[in-house]
Length: 328
Ligand SMILES: O=C(O)CCC(=O)C(=O)O
Image (cartoon, rainbow, N blue to C red; front, side):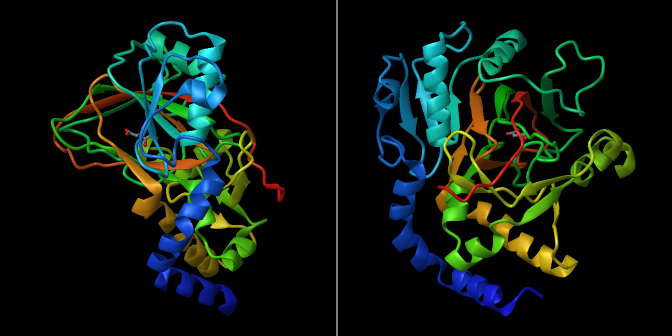
């Protein structure tokens, strides 16, 4: 059982949820987003965010998270200034989208490399010619499996900064991806629950998902990827904002709590991503690109299109060791 103080806080939080959202969201958004464009419905140019005259426009999807960037061709090499503006748009919006790009693998890799070194995922076949590409292919023989809230590769010691996903084939209907702003998820928790989890760490384990998918024993996976302990609340290394950093796919338990107490608390924390008011939902079109910040968001790929085909390719940008600092 969790302590009665926290139990009460959780109960009152979930009971008074609607009221809290109504009162607190505008204030939290202003604080969390710290940006000129995302809280407004409408359009802003990259020039407004950086002072540089970049050639793209930013169209927010929701006040909480997500923006579509238009007027930019990612198949061409981009200048350092444009890369910096895209990076700023990513930090401001946590996930950004580009339509009609139809990148080949080389173009996808070049774009992603603009933001850092790329990782190789253990699910990538050993003989694949571009090993930094993770292909996610589903159809009549394989139902979509990415339908759980998660941030990518949190089982690494230094989990990914971000992922760039390219849509090669999309189903006639369905197969949307949902994104949640995990800074807002944290900001919306009651103060005593925030105090309670601050400073806690949790263990993230690759085997939770990939033992079955790769048909390996947990110990085999752990030889190369031992379970990792990360802060439950993580400070973003670029924005300084705190985010809830546990996810239902990879987080196993909270260090120092009894197993049932850990599970009960994790269940409540996992559930925060499911709040529609901190989400956006992206309807894919062929050739579209999504680029999300794994340090500040989670995503969920709706698996509602079986047996239609859906083929995506992902490049994943390496990140750094998560930490928490109280000064924000
Ligand atoms: O296919 C998608 O939309 C997202 C896939 C996913 O969950 C991932 O790349 O981690």
